[in-house]
Length: 418
Image 1 (spheres, rainbow, N blue to C red):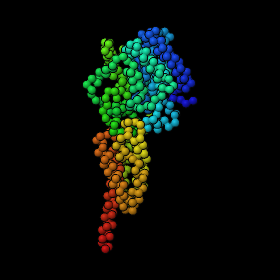
Image 2: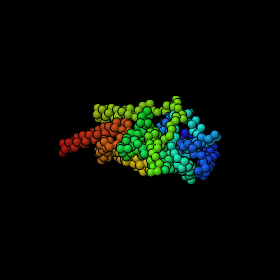
Image 3: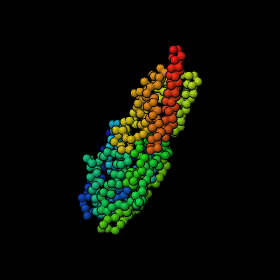
Image 4: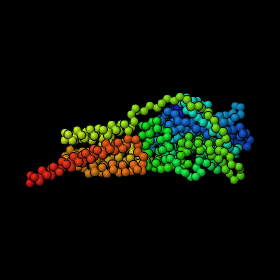
């Protein structure tokens, strides 16, 4: 049996299947009894889990809690963020926006124990709901947990565990949710800026995000877009009110509790050098080589071949992102710098360079690098990308200048011989 590589990775499928059936029976029973249920004893809450030191948990997590307060009453968490890390090509499918997540039900005690173990604070916001709204939400949860409905196509910004929980709540209320912090329709940070607030301690995780995210991720977000982050939704719920034509305005959150206190967390290990340091070193290499080449009057073309190959291989990934289902990655100006073209034309450019000629691809490379710097006014690039661009610029300009000079000497020598 495979295991989920999520916060519940120690549960095997058969345990979860038994628990899911049990929870579905509880939910269906409650929803079927209608007005006979004592909804005053039933609490439905939004659970917001702060980040902990796993790459998939850097931005926090959201779940729902259904708690029957009567003696012996059931208490479980509904989690829309369950995934199977062992599924075929999961990493690639996640990058391309074709990975599927699912909703699962767990005992709240087990849910709580996982976050105690992770040292991650969990905040509970008890929702201020009417009996009818509670019944509608319970029915919607039961429908969501059915085998044919539990899986969904995950999208980090627009359809994730947080937006799913928000939408389920909002769509089953007999009132309109007013988010008071958006009263003036103001714009907020971009998607990129929002997640930078969470991955700042992990430069390589930030680098990975920034290299894949394109220009659309730098556009300002509206209130319903920034709520993809659990903490942002929690803050918005804290000040939100409910308004209908027939009832008095009421707060969305009735009570806020801390159900798990923040504990000690193990730091996530990363490569010790920041991306910018690595690219500074990479920039120093062509500068030193260029100086040696001018002294020895010789071109070290093997270095250029390796650099072109590395750029071309990295460029394949960014090129494939054009076809990704993620709406924020397809238009990425970093593709001007990292693209597969060196794999097709690099050999011909180096071949001509060894013969004392300048291949047209070098001029194209120079143009693309200039465009890369220009488009940096529109898009935020990953850390160190400007250093890489300078490294490539130095090499391209060096080769063009060197062989223009050689060609000029050859031409003068040819004229003198005549």
